[in-house]
Amino acid sequence: MKKIYTKNRFNLVWINLWIGIALSILVMASGVWIIHSDIQSRALARLSQQHTINQSRIDEFQQTQSQILRSLSEKPDPSLFYHFLKADTHIMQIRFIDLKGDEKIRFDRLRDGSIRQISADKLQNKGNRYYFRQFAALSENVIDFSKLDLNMEYGRLDIPFNPTLRAGIAVYKDGIKIGIIVINYYMQEWIEHLKSDNVSTFFLIDHEGYFLIHPEPSWAWSRYRSPAQRADEYFGLSESHFSLLKKGEHRWINEDTVAFSLDLYGQKLLALYQPKISPNDILIRRLLQFGVIIFLALTLVVVPLIGIIRFNLHRFEVESTKNKVMLAHQAKLDAMGDMLGAIAHQWRQPLNSIGLIMQDLVSAFNHHELDKEYLSVSEKGVMDQLQFMSQTIDAFRNFCVDEKKEEPCNLIEIVTEIRTLFQTQLNTHGITLETVCSKGREVLHSCQDESEPERFNLNSSPALIKQILLSLITNAKEALEQSTCDPTITLTLHAYKESLRIDVSDKAGGINTPTAKRIFEPYYTTKEMGTGLGLTIAHTLAKRQLKGDLILQPRNKEGVCTFTLTLPRF
Image 1 (cartoon, rainbow, N blue to C red):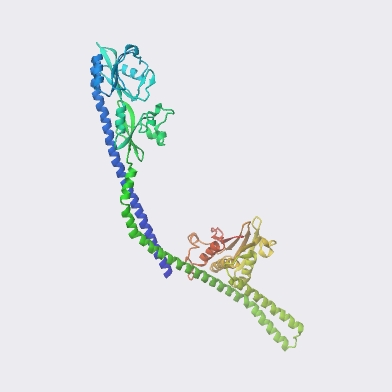
Image 2 (image 1 turned 180 degrees about the vertical axis):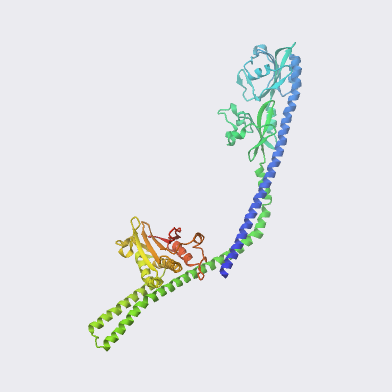
């Protein structure tokens, strides 16, 4: 009991340690999650503020350009076109287009910064362009903007790409619409301004998932690339991640990228901001700051504790090994005691027979009936009894040999030896021990009538098999002594290609489910004087020493209790 208490106390310390470690990990994980959430919230706040600033700049630009457009629509004079174009470097082009789409007045800012009025022979018709149809449908004094797009001249894209935004207003004279004013704006400078932000990397995506702005030039204006590529391909995510958002909403695309809705003069776009220092990198930096403290805490507290536990664990393992050896030895001694008890029962009959023969010889001598033939018959009777006693001694000696030694043996011979040794003792208790073999579809016959005993050959340890069977038979005998059912113990042998099986059965009523679940646990017993080790050791020997298995079959309706020992042939 002292050893059991020591084991339980050690197990309690070990369990407490693991609980402490688990709780520490849980606390640390919770702390990491809280820190990560805080970092992500701070990042979201900064990016949201940056997005608000960008949206405000767009709105301010709309207000300033609206004044220019209204001034031009009131007086579409070429001199005004020139002066407004010269005053604002963001303006690329100012045109007056009639309702047929023909350019009537056009001033361009060239790439060298100079301003030129386009001659009449080079003016174009823009009637098939979407922005012309959009602006031509405007009511009086209404200003509208086209979508952010690339500039085209003579039906072809400008190369290199020239991002353009157009603003338009209808021109009325005496209440009649006569044309439209269209201003083209250079947007590359605005794009570079967005990309140059020190806090984040900026992406702009249209409603179909194509990039308009991207930090990598090869991905910018991806609709016009060959092949055309979309945001879901770049990020490796589903299309749903890049669906448009409502005003004021945001969405984390991944751990490092957040999306906001951007209204570019009625064009609904998706603005993505990616912090240049990701929340995960910030988290790692913060964790590294406390890494030394955590390491020292673990070194000063946990490591010594683990050392103590390892020392105690080693000591416990040594003691446990000694206990197992002692228990196995005790089980062996118990089995030998049962064997000696069986031998004592076996010897009573031959000793009585020898005593009767000796009395008969004395009587024959006194009555002058003793002759050579009479003496020879008596001698044979004594020798037969002595031979029987010698066989029991051989069986006991075989049981006491090195139990780990494996050798060719036969299962029928093993169970026959056990039956010979124990049948007399069992008979004293009114119990019968049967040994039967199965063949074919569970056809049973006595092992003595087995026509092919070689079916039950195997290479194993006969001593260990006998010890296990002895434990099972003793267990069945004790159960039958407390029962009024059929007092029969049956050993049924089964032969398979790779293994042999022995079923040890009795009809003492079976074992209830709670007990069956714990039947092989150490120190578990339902007997007043039991140690709770017999079946535990038998189970251990079967699995570890014999490389087989010992199981308890489920309880059936007839109250039959069956233990099954399975042994490999080789």
